[in-house]
Image 1 (tube, rainbow, N blue to C red):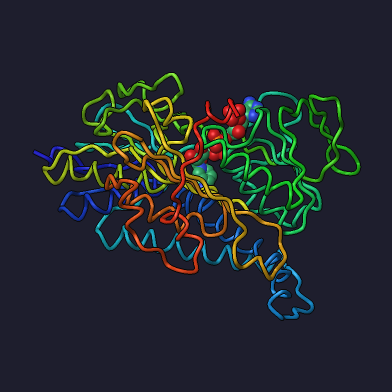
Image 2: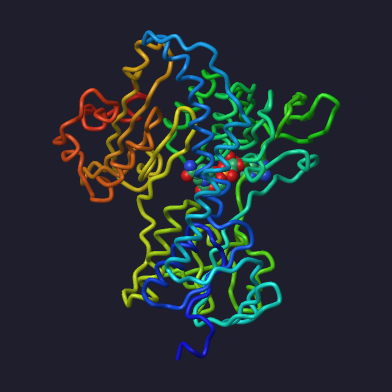
Length: 459
Ligand code: NDP
């Protein structure tokens, strides 16, 4: 039956989700082809999570060298060489890209390059050549978008930020989400003068308010000029760089503007209409819980579906797709309690509900919060605070949210995510012995809930 087609599965997009699906499906004996128009590895490996984390490490050394003094070290002549770092980073990304392709080859997947377009429900055209497949998977990812207005052609997006020839002396980051916070932190820590401009009242909309406020305070302490409730209305090129007109009338001069104003699914010129694949009001491919599109033999997963734009989510969706279609075990991915991190300096990590969300979802919640100066900074003298917070549904005593701002937050919250996924109660947290001395132990030693907001107001 399958021989009616050139392939059992044709995957469009060689990012985290597409590559995982192709490899795993091929592992079940399916005949699989994959096509990618840019570089194998996709956003995460080529111009996202991985290089971003390398930038973040590079940037953190600046503080580390300063902090070393408190521990008796003298670090002389420390200098940052942008070109050397970029060359090392590029070599590592090329290595990973090679690994992705090798994994596909080893799994027996046919690797193609070029732009793919659906011709109908079973046929794909790649650069004027047609292929047929029983099942097609769309995993084309997303792309950064610029805000409307004048002068944005002088700005860059997160695509270009990884290829800059030099570190700017002055940088303006526009936005208050993941990418804006991460790159404001990176540029600032590397020594640029950074202004972060955000249209809303506080950065990281959707995160817990204590996380947002703590992080904003720390970013400002580290020297980022944070302008909230402000927009960039106009950008102009000048002899000295770029001039930005802000909504409050101020004109800011800078060398670089990074627009970190969100991403959209890659659905352009894919032939979705022709194949009967519908998109939703946000322009994302419409899918059901099994990642099936409105055309029953065509599936979609990852950023192009705009469910949760996170690499591990795309990979988990891919695993569920392979189980469903190739392993006779139909299952949907559970998008609940997905942890995530913002690799700012300091970093943020979170899992489950914010206090605000929990108060809407439950009749009563207990909130535990601890704000402290990490032990390390008793000798460095650095005025950096960490904040941890647990949200507990009072009736069941289940921990429904864990949030942290501070060093190692992403490493710590990953473990908390296991506990929350397992449905741990506050009593399980209390019965867990801490590891001393760590910051993480704070999560199992918080005993006194905060006063109820009403009680606070009445004081
Ligand atoms: P986000 O959606 O996180 O943030 C976009 C920001 O831009 C928001 O602050 C938004 O404001 C603002 N914005 C949007 N449109 C406009 C506009 N027209 N004018 C002014 N401001 C605007 O997107 P990012 O681009 O930072 O990242 C995209 C996604 O990629 C993330 O949501 C995340 O899923 C993923 N990602 C994950 C990372 C990680 O896991 N560490 C790292 C980087 C990205 P408002 O809040 O008011 O809407």
